[in-house]
Image (cartoon, rainbow, N blue to C red; front, side, top):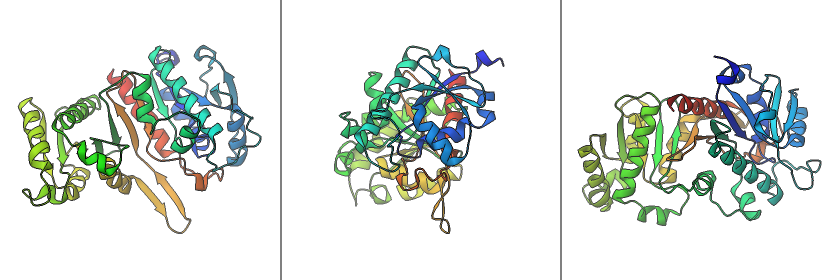
Amino acid sequence: MTNNSKPILAVTMGDPAGIGPEIAVKAFAEKQVYEQCRPILMGNAEVLRQIMEVIGIRLALNAITSVDQARFEWGTIDVLDHELEGGASALRWGEVNARYGDLAFRCVVSAIRLALEGKVDATVTGPIHKAAINAAGHHFSGHTEIYAHYTDTRKYGMLLADEHLKVIHVSTHVSLRQAIDLVKKPRIMEVVRLMDTALRQMGVENPLIGVAGLNPHAGDNGLFGSEEAEEIAPAVEALRAEGLKVEGPVPPDALYALANGGRYDGCVAMYHDQGHIPFKVVGFDWDKDKGTMKSVKGVNITLGLPIIRTSVDHGTAFEVAGKGIASADALLLAMDYALRFCKAK
């Protein structure tokens, strides 16, 4: 494969006060990354210089204003430079700040626009801080909603993926009260179809998808709620009639253990935490003695978009920002998944 045939990935730095800049530098320092793709970092060169001093990684910085100025050489980070209001000299790690939120937001929007224009093949996002984004006047509840808005996408879903467990959600960033009301047959069918397509793109030929119940014991034949009988089971039956391999409603406390053991190729969660909690139990490795994460694995993929978007499935980790101890595992995995989807296209 020649250098020019490798996919171009636009990777966003995330909130400058979080661990995003650190894990970006650590990922871009890996030679294998450049053997597989041509990465560009959407961020701020001053911030990157600061974090490189902290973590002791010395890479050259090529500050650019367009993709065609990138060198794509291992040892050099091509950074599409975005201004940080007030400069980076007064940057404070772990601080929620509207200036930082604005920078992170603009980097994401730039990546989206490059992908829509066909100048990059996929986008990979670092962690943003929702409060900082909103303080800057950008009123979105997360990356997924930003991507949906700027790509004019109405039908989309959040997929969490690691080696064994893959989870898509009926709803994400809404209150639990709202989430219950969103458990409806059409939406369940929509996300199952998105999951089926994504699994096939990942190389699963005939995926089996498990659909969680909403209530304890999947309602226990109506004892604990009616959503299973009225919305979830009818959706499963309709999907089977379309030819998809689907089972459910499966009791939520059993579904993820079965999937992690290989029973299901993918899972459908009814709401945010029902999917995120088991996923992070599997992917996050806490070191009790050191008081930090040894490894944070897991990828967040937005399905249904006209462009490819993968992301780390962890936050800004302000409590360890600027300390040089953050793991780049999730970002490297997110880049790997972006490349898988590039190949599928």
